[in-house]
Length: 163
Image 1: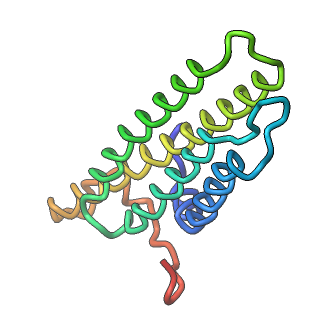
Image 2: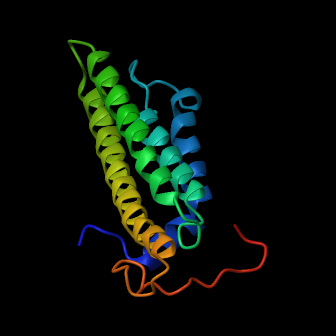
């Protein structure tokens, strides 16, 4: 199934800082690692997409209780897709005509990781949008059985003092 289970959404939200840190490290590789045969080994697109994935998780942490988070999660989709396309097209156009095997390998690895992160983000955003939209409808209707997405979602146990 394409949608994430509520437990997987909560797990992603719990670990959003890890995604952001990993993305910052991937992005920093561009500047910290030496170039090999004139080819940078940084994974810039993957780093940006990992930071976006973490930002989305941090922004949607109240998806079970806050009415209207579905609009925020739907809104996050467009900038993340635009950033992905911009970076991929820019990276593709900036490659040399006589591009080396190493440059092609770095580009391929970066593109594959960034695409996987974008798909994970789309799954997360679609899940939050549908579950929270059902919650918003249920809260505005005042009915207990009007929501097919939220009724089966138990409240997640939250630790005191954790975000």
